[in-house]
Image: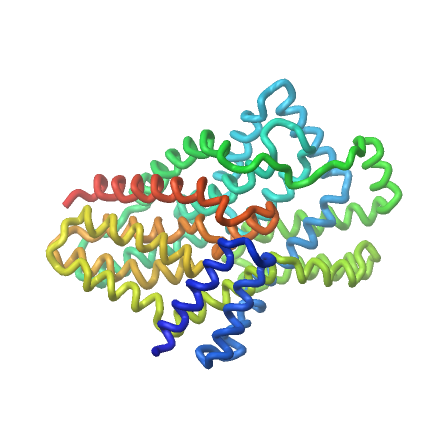
Length: 428
């Protein structure tokens, strides 16, 4: 049996294990990596390389920084502000504000840090206040992925340039303009926003954090006793500096991934945090999930699994298909592959040139198929393979099978709108 098929079988078993909710969170991905080593399909370095992935390191540091920030007076003042916003209302107003905040945040921030920031904000809400925070987390995390790559700036420009490069390399003379890119993304995003306002009710009513009956005065008294003013200021500086650094990923390069660790080091020497607390943060379930998933994504690419899927689609469609059929097939294939591999960029780079080639070979304008494939590659909201959804499932303690009732209908609606919008923008 070829290694590609072994990887596919192991991935299938892992997904079943995760959906069953019979195992501790993060166990299945690491177990899958271990099985691939035992079968000789992957080396130890390939299987566990996800634990030194840039995003895994960044997430680990940011989790610790966020937990320290949650102990400050600022977070409790934020809690009071959010309660004031929703006072006398059903909680829907606050939910709408958070959805809009997420969409705006995704124009300048990457999914992982953005989701952690949202988790931090939601954790400040006390139990029994409007819409439960557990009902809002998954929709907001889904909006993180769906809201990403809509404005051509920062990392999104990589996707725009790659798409247009694939189009010109295929021999087509026209490219996707920045304005068209925005329109093709914003229309489906608006539909997803409307869906989010209605469908959150299908999720379990639970809170991310229980107050345990402490009033605001008692909480602030505990903060006063545990942190000196200068220590609290250092936490603020570390948190703000870390968050702002995420906005300048392109400029800072690899340095951005260790910025949280620098802040943690300063706070360790300032006796704000001890090594036991650091070790606990570094070994949280999120880290096991991300480390395993990133390793599996790399293995799937290295063993030709993603390329094999793309080639199969090309053979299935042939050279005489309509642009609507090509666009719909590749858009749904892209979101399925992204959900199974957790690699948005990898999915884009494998499937987009194939979608364009199939369209060109049929004598069609390839821009609809290419653009839809790129947008769909960033809609991995069903499985916790993606950073944003993985963090949300871990932090919200969701049962994965229970989340499908929200994420699968949203994915279908979103991808259909994406495909239709792209075909209307570039009619054959």
